[in-house]
Length: 109
Image 1 (cartoon, rainbow, N blue to C red):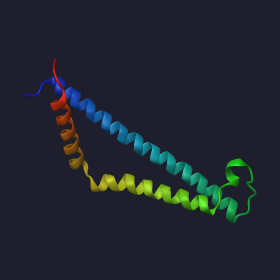
Image 2 (image 1 turned 180 degrees about the horizontal axis):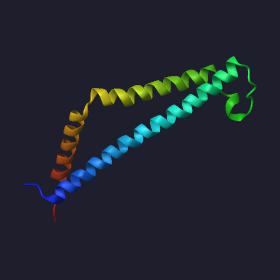
Image 3 (image 1 turned 45 degrees about the vertical axis):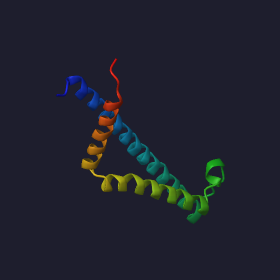
Image 4 (image 1 turned 60 degrees about the horizontal axis):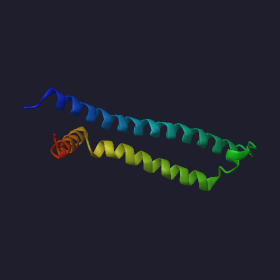
């Protein structure tokens, strides 16, 4: 028999976990936006010959873009592949399992 308090606590835990997931997704999209802007600046600088020789853009070269692209691709694969491989059913089962563990460890005084 579950009490209303347990359901509220479980709902709060789910909200916390999904909030972290939303923050991770938001940060990925922000990274994608900054990467797209950096890629545009790199293409304009390298292939159109626009002289961008001031601080942040003077260090934007092929090596930096290769490293940045690989980091961006790995983060995209990590984020979206984990969403596809581990579906919502798996995620819900895992969350319930974690909550059950926490409830067993909780000691009532």
